[in-house]
Length: 215
Image (cartoon, rainbow, N blue to C red; front, side, top):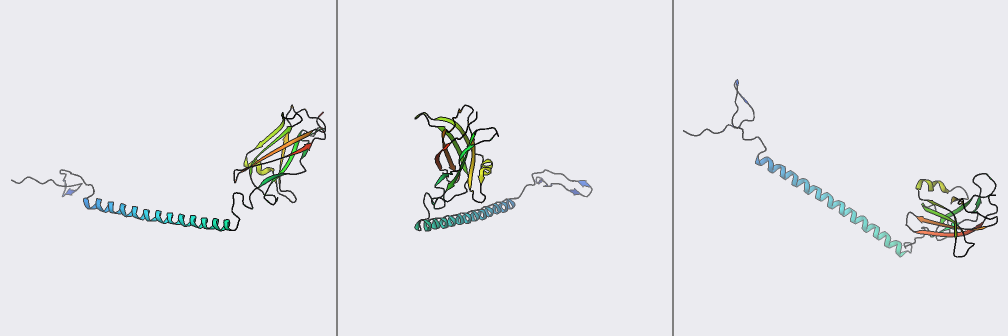
């Protein structure tokens, strides 16, 4: 007598009786697995072609930029300090003592300065600002009379005045409570501007005379 072959049934009905035999699995066949693997391989090939095209496009753009840079260099327009880059800062003559509380006497210095290019023209450029007020009456022992540091882009934007006949930063630096200024005292003003575009620092200094002080 021949052995019975197992009946492969996932589910089924024979007449009015449910026939359930030995279940050996209903997974994908060998052919189905082969087709799925072929699809994955083809998808990877397409993805590789797309990546190669993107890399080729990037290389082409880099080559174009290098060509443009070479042209600028040949015309003398590309250098560590291009024509239209900040070459320094200029403190304006209107920098002077200031009264900020309405009481008699100066309690601060209003500093006006602007970034300039190599031709001395004003440039609107964002950057960190540090202003120090110093008393150099004792040589070799300067006394700090006041300091202000601004690094917040939103705040610095408010300090720029670009209206007619302006184009400058205005920084009001209050005197320290223990400054003890004298009428007619000369104060050294040191300004440092760190250009956010290049990361370079530019400095300038000037002297102002306080015409009146707090009683």
